[in-house]
Image (cartoon, rainbow, N blue to C red; front, top):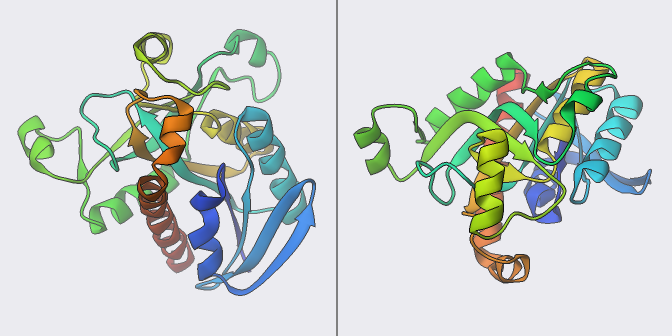
Length: 245
């Protein structure tokens, strides 16, 4: 039975996915709580990696090494940088770039890349699922997209090890990466997947516009749960679509 690995940085980003698995089994591995189970004919292993590139990379490598998944899917929330995007819109990581890393030095080692990407076939599946969920491509006619309450974008995600907040950090992130949103794990997930020759997909729901401090951000518990559920719902349907392929 093929295996899909699903990773989130926060527990709220993977809680719903764990609840949907049949015959779920929990184990403690490599500092992670890993839940494995079945979903529509696929074996799914899911874990909360913790925040930051090191946590994300370590979790990804562990799941690849132990479970040999055909794909790694990372689902979660991010801060919006593209003014076309609104809270709860979704960004597919067509391109993933490190924000605060000397990428030329990183590229001296395998897979010798300065930026990374979600696997095109998985991007196609994610796009189809988002359309089914009523999302409109934000790159369509601006007037059409602006009127729609739910948008998605196959765009660029910036990944760094600091929580981006305030105009100065937001502007610096845009200038450095030209990204549509910013977070702390996606490029590391795609990096390790590429290093191992494993397909990957990074998916982010916009939770804020990088305009509030982390403590204030965390106080919006209900809102964060809603945005995390948006990403989880889409991720579950993506996995179901992979199973049906």
